Image 1 (cartoon, rainbow, N blue to C red):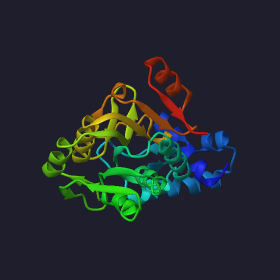
Image 2: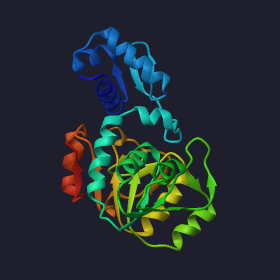
Image 3: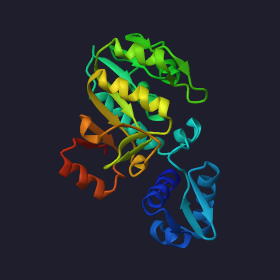
Length: 253
């Protein structure tokens, strides 16, 4: 197992069980205790879990937002595969809203050569697309969240109310069957809701590490979205739940 895949698997296990013995992780992942302890220390420094007396413990609350650089590091391969798949669901000459975050940036990179009108919800996404030859780039107004570089506030909401888009490509901080799609920051959650309501359909792009996470601000229920795209590390229980709920789940290879 590659180091990035192993880190992701550790996070998946800890998120599912909340508290896991490090010795149990060595057995499940079939690596040395030294390797697991090094991985746990790395994830602990990133703020993604806590280490305590032989245990790895789920570390963040629903109001804590890991920094963009940290999120970019985790599940980067999965996010790139998700981005490639999402790009196939977008037709040329469509008008789309493209969400921010590390997954949004990965999707933007897949759209550079496309002929689209793209409304970017963050400067990070806009920066990727600003020189794209066939992209008509739109940036909503409002205030800029420092660090995240997403656009928030009344002016941003008013812009979204005045337009209608073919699709919204939404990313998520958390995704849970009962609580739905959630976001760390309540202002970001408000913008996502407005973009969702301004679009004919919403596609959600979320890597498997987001499943089971309940972040601070609710965006919408899962039944409100058209398609959910994730990676193959998604737990079987979630696959079964979404199948029974009639949610169009697409899993990358």
